[in-house]
Length: 369
Ligand SMILES: *Cc1c(COP(=O)(O)O)cnc(C)c1O
Image 1: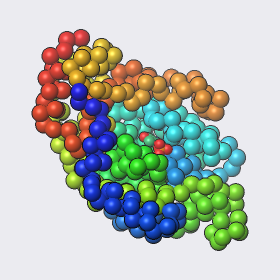
Image 2: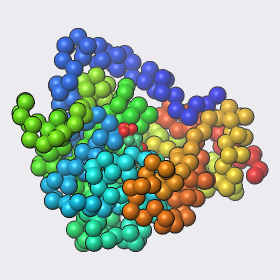
Image 3: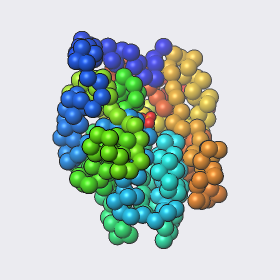
Image 4: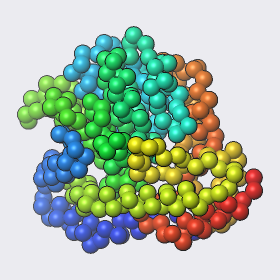
């Protein structure tokens, strides 16, 4: 069986350094808000080319706290609207609701990404921000989206949970908007041994607000200026992430090599491969195929020992939990719905071998719909 993502083997490939780093934290007697978190925040900000990184408890918290900090700093009115692509993980829109704001869903393009044209269609007088999602590790068109947002006085929060190290025009995602949210969920390209996330920004005030909100609203101990939450990147996770960050560029290159082999090897007329833009460099968190007979192809591959997944089987506009909160729940988004019906994610990881990729390509090329 070729697993979708062999997480145990991936983490084993960081041994013995990974376990040693965890053991040092265990023996240190200091588990939260310590030196490992501080060191990781500095290293990750430097790796991205950003001024500040604030470690938090998860990607969802990173999105939520960044929005709450923006709403306070930029004095957004009640019921301010935030534009979110209709095809993404539920957290992108859930964070908007949790921050007390209103999600407005936008159609996506042939790459499942938000574009200026689709965002402009749903912009209203109440819009204050837009959240481009670098879905599957492929960067959204940040130069165009940031220009457009700037013209209309909108803040840009990047959802970079799937795109650690992706670039547009030589600049890493996470450095384009006023802030970006990252997730270190174990299966992400930079994955912890549990939950973790970070807000990245160049804005000193925004960084300070996020750090305060994440720490019970306190800048100094026992003085709580705002009602915050408990959301920390703990020392074990930070220590593990430092070990894995050191190899992330090489791991992303290995994923790109797998993607190149898929791009060359897949010849079936029944599948659509993800395209690579001219200036955008994906980190291929996911290798998303589209196929009109997706479920049959998945069964065919399973019978040949290839595990696949679907990201995601529903658009946000089809999620019952979000329905009461969405400003435009009935707007039609045929592209987003098409992705939900047709997407199939092939195995991809730094450990996937060329032989395994060619086995998967052969299995797909031999399949007739
Ligand atoms: C994983 C993910 C999140 C949420 O991250 P968690 O750490 O699981 O909370 C948010 N947005 C996208 C696009 C994701 O893939």
